[in-house]
Amino acid sequence: MAIITMRELLRSPGDALARIDDGEPCLVTRHGKPVAALVPVDESQVESYILAAAPEFVEARREAEHARAEGRTISLEEAARELGVHLEEAEAAIEETVAEAQSAER
Image (tube, rainbow, N blue to C red; front, side):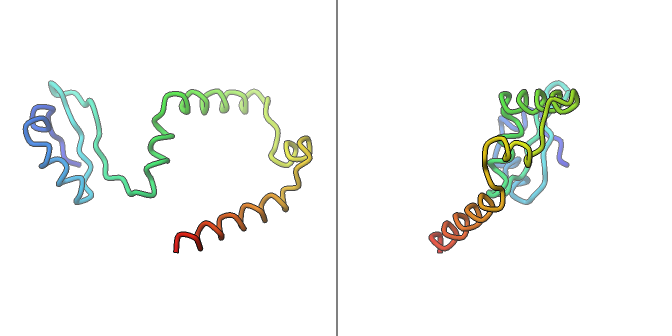
């Protein structure tokens, strides 16, 4: 992992981006302390990175973990029964939709 200063990043952003394009993450420091990490992101990972870092989703995950730890959750099967959803039918519908979307992309 490359370590670059904020000053280096501001003066030569292309150098840092070239390293990232080559697959090398960069740790950005200010006054010797880390302030950011720049990492290569595959196009298929963009949504995951956004969701992992968005404060509202981070808080929602924290609350969900708290609820799970306290036993305030139910299984998917229980939720489906309560909602009158048949999981096998839902899974089949999802698979069909995904297959249609993939064939439309081609």
